[in-house]
Image: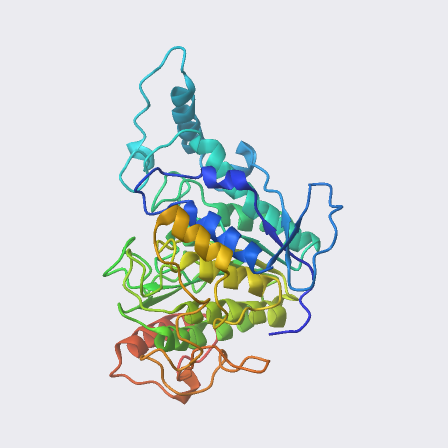
Amino acid sequence: MPDCCGPATVVHDDRLVAYDFGPGHPMSPLRVDLTVRLAAELGVLGPADGGDGGAPSPAPGRVRLVPAPVADDDRLATVHSRAYIEAVRRHDRAADASAHPTDPPDLTAYGLGTEDNPAFAHMHEATAHVVGATVEACRQVWSGESLHSANITGGLHHAMPDRASGFCVYNDVAVGIAWLLEQGVERVAYVDVDAHHGDGVEACFAGDPRVLTISLHESGEHLFPGTGRPGDVGGPGAEGYAVNVALPPGTRDAGWLRAFDAVVPELLREFGPQVLVTQHGCDSHADDPLAHLALSVEGQRAAALALHDLAHELCGGRWVATGGGGYSIVEVVPRTWTHLLATVGGRPLDPTVPTPPRWRAHVEAAYAVEPPATLGDLGGDPGGDPGSDPGGGLLEGEKGPRDTRPVFRPWSAGYDPGDDLDRSVHATRTVVFPLHGLDPLAW
């Protein structure tokens, strides 16, 4: 990765964990708390900015903390309908009416009050806070205050303009991209590596050729939301600007990275984005309880490194990174997102490094579970994924004394029509590449 990354920030404050669907819900805010604790123990996070911009500069490789504002209704309305925003607010007013309690409104028509999206107290403010954090990350990058900026509580990519979906109330990513377009950005690329299709962001910009959305996800034949097929290429006037790579269940590091290599770099280079926005849901991990992919922490780290490098190659380094899904709360999310934050800061962490003793002690005391011993899964063997194939490619080889990225067989080595993953990738290339003037059979 490039040696000089420039200033980097993470937009975060402790109030963001108020986005909480309650005990037992998979999307626990504990995953954010554990990530911040781990990143702080490892020296990834630098000093906080009190809001006046006068905080001291963090040491090289550290990510400066900046406070997260709350998005107002006008900002939310750049993506969401006023009726939907008012419905969310109506719930909060009913929940707050302690002197004269009222029955909470029926919000099921808006996707709320369901098992996936239960309504909770102060829901509007909590989710508007997440949106404000992502908009601030976009502002940090477009203004030049930061070269890279992250919001790990963000990535709520399923929310639709008029309803909640898939644990997502407001779509922070879509609102952030809309803000960038308002500022005059002409081309924004959005790459989503969550195990679930980034359907909400795609829907918001399906007819806008200024936004290229690329989602690599488990096939909708097997997983929520059931969309994101190769033939879903965008709306009229923007055909080819929605790109979907639907992966078979069980896809491991080598296959996932091969799919990324086959689609993402070439399309981004052809599109020429001015800003890269990415969603880093880590439910693609083998241990995640809600999906069926089989990546390691090293594989997810490799994706973040590749996207960082593409931001430098194509966007002058302008990169906004968000969190997303991920429901292995102790084992996976804190390590993967700490690697993401370290990459945002320009100093990737070695996956073989032990997790800090104080962090392990906190996990054991607070949750009575054994924490992971190291920052990775493969024990320093980049071929440790049994699904890996030898080969080169975009993600192979990292500058430094050791290469800890999983190896894979690059797409340039040829297409195997007998392989399920290759057929999936080939289907996407066949449909999308000609719409951008690219040859799907060239490698």
